[in-house]
Each structure stands twice: as C-alpha cells, then as structure tokens.
Length: 165
Length: 85
Image (cartoon, rainbow over all chains, first blue to last red):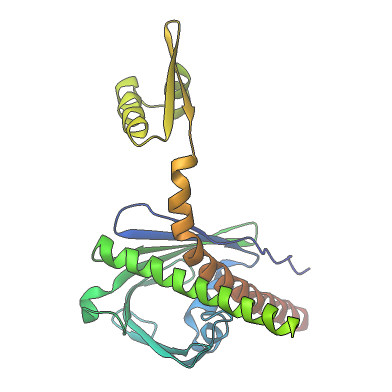
C-alpha cells in the first residue's frame, strides 16, 4: 500500500539568533528520504522546487567530501552553492557546510547544516538545523526567501493579468 | 503560576524568570485575582516574526512538495522490487 502524501507545510523556527530550524514529516521510511537527499539525480528533482532548474548536482557523500549545486532561476539567473560533508551516519544524520556563492564573505559566510531523520511507523520526520556565522547572515538568508516569495507573487500577478486580456 | 509550575516541571523561581521576560516583550499579560496572579498569552507580537519568516518557509514547503513526489516514486519502486523477489 502506498502511504498518502502529506502536503503539510514546512515549519521554520528560530532557535537562536544565528540559527534556523526547518521541520517536515514525509510519507516514506528514512532510508528512502536519505537517498533523496544524497543522490544527485534525485536531489536535482526536488531541491529547486518549481523555481527554475538544477543544472548541476555533484555530491561526494563521505566525510571531507565536497558537494556543489548550480541552479538557474526562472528569469535566467545562475546561482551556485557548495560545501563539504563533515559527518555522515547513513539513513540518520548528515552534517555539511553550505556556502551561497553569491554572498559576500566567501566560505566564511556559510552555514553548518545538520539534517536528522527520525522514522515512526514508516513515516520520517526530517529536521534541518542551519547554524550561520552571525545573525546578519541568518537574516539575509531568511530575506532571500522573501524576495523569492515576491517573485512568486509577481508571476501569479502576471498570470492573472494575462488571463484578463 | 502554580499550574505552570506543575505543567512545566520547573521550580517556581525559574518559571517566574521566564514569565518576567515574556511579560517584558509583551507575549504574556498578567492580572491579579485575589492572592493569585493570572497570566494569559498574547500571541499578537509574534505576528511580525511570522510574517518575516513566511516566504522563506514557503520556499521550503514548495521544495518539500517536490520531494514528496520523488519519495512517492521511490516507495512505489521499492514495493515493486519487493513483489518480484
């Protein structure tokens, strides 16, 4: 039997001034969630949601291994992210660094992300704890979401406008 | 106050300290009823924070909706494999 998909929303909380915590439950066992967050071909299919296309995903999933992803936004803007794996417990926990290549400060401005997977009755809760070097960087990341949200709103507005012609 | 001490399993001075901070930022209101102090929640000041985080949260929600689709397929594949073995 296929479990029903949960289309609940992600929960974002602010455990400390320089942190973000993202939580969401998935209708799949944790070894499959682990695959989806570590295999490049699978990551490519969800990481950028519907906001453009992931054109490159390289992940050397081992301690000290590097990863890099490039995506192209709907308006043709290319953005890159990269980092390094620091800790790996297959199907349970992944700690890695993440640097947005467009941000000031280079690798110093990146976050350390800890992903944990907990399975209960075939469903998996994923938490992503992001620790930033400062509150300023954390706030900048949250506000980048705001811009993306605005872009969505503009796209929607355009659709509505076009439908009125 | 006594109710909070029971529910939280913390000592009264600790609870008082937390309540003081929450009162200062306006998240908790207090009134005196006889010998008791009655605290009530005021969620309104949290609204700007929620507004601030909302779009970032939406980005993750959209991302995870796409992940749901990938996972659904992986679950189906695994079930099909299990059936063949």
